[in-house]
Length: 387
Image (tube, rainbow, N blue to C red):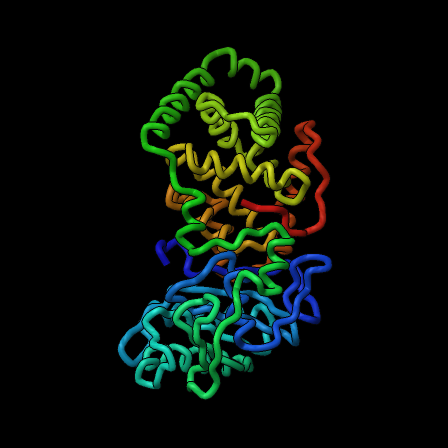
């Protein structure tokens, strides 16, 4: 991992299906052999893993949580980092109700047709994981290793008794299902993180100055008088302002630096921020995510934590654990004490299912109603287009 705010990249499908992974109505697919399984991993994660340990929960014939962590090899035995990772993976497997686990090791240090000596560190990690799972009555049914996931790359099991070459990951049934579901498959985790790369320092500095000016203006007498006469007015106007800017940006219009500053102040209002959680479960989810990405890149610290937390929640709700993790990590880097981002990050690490967090969207919808603002109705828990 490149950050320490969360320990793994979980993908948590929002449903299950008897024939394989479920990516929404009509998108259940079957994974029938090890090569197909390994090639499906980038689609399951949303990016191509490198030097990674990937653990896949199975219950019956359904895929549950898919977890990934950077592979840290120690001489002869798992070190402290990997022991913590394995403990957490096993805890998620128990919570998922998994009866079997599959492991895929991706490591470009593995030579073709690797021998036992080449895989000593990997074998030690897998052995520790197998023992943890066994204590909970979960079988580690297969371990596959490869140097990289690309068409024609060799793969083998940990003992070397089974081997083959990988089919094209981009043409797998799982990849096709992900594309139909609107979810991007990126070339690496770094490419995923690049979505939220901060804007140039001078852009952030300019917006920081505008935020300071706007905040000073907002503390003057007229604003205080309006708030005293109608305490909900500032909340309502702030929410309406953000909704207008979402529609503006979705229509292709640019958001000016002055508007970014005003949006930052609006999102500091917890009633506004919490109301906007409801958009993650409605028809405006895609449009809202695009604005959260823009603000997450252009706002300075700590203000960028608010849109990043909203992006993290939206990605989490549609089952995109890696994107949620990247967004929440960035939010906590901007504001280590950000409560919403911290709670969501804890839930993500613990493997809490997206459906369990849907009530946050319902609460946001009710807050908006109390303010007199009508938001789109909450829709089914299906993956929108994403970022």
